[in-house]
Image 1: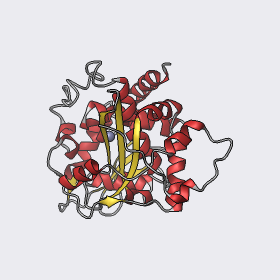
Image 2: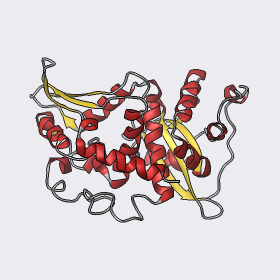
Image 3: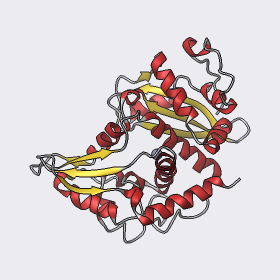
Image 4: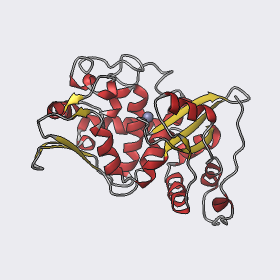
Length: 295
Ligand SMILES: [Zn+2]
């Protein structure tokens, strides 16, 4: 499939580049443009309604530029080679927040489109992650709810870093080609024991139905005993890698915490889990760092 050349919106094109800005980041900003028709079709097929390309406001452009600038150098280099487009889509009813689509370029090289739902441009990281975790549970009479504490800064740098980590993974063949990614994976999608039989296998992220909120305590207790940095990491080896790569940067460079709290109806904390402080998670963060710092 060919690449479509995209024009940047006028508000961006008229800006004069700052001399100190890095060339890779400028190259990446040129890839921002409307989503490919196939991407819009994929969202519609997944049940999204009122789906269309989102036009970035000046304030949103500034946020997108900041998120691109904050990508680690390896991510920027790989995106410069393999990212065809970065798009924002209006798809309020869609379940997915972001989509990374891979296809073949004119010379057989892998190309990627990253598409992000535009409504998250207004969300803080803590708000975004709390909303995401709430989709795991159904209301029951327990009064329990989950709160994620990370950062009041925008969610976009995390989301772009997570999606860009998929591009890094796929273009370097990290989780698919070199067998399983860590002992916790039987293959790309199947969890190994003991996780395959435990509570971690029972969440929406493992394609199970929503759990009653009363079961949230046991689910986060299982996360605390595991080497996963988040419950979303259990979706596949690819998500596991993307979460580790993203949180490695956010925690070490930006000092952003990641805390999951289950609270009762009075706001009392029932269980508090901080994966970034767990020894097994820290070992895996170091392993991913080592993988990404290879020349
Ligand atoms: Zn992902």
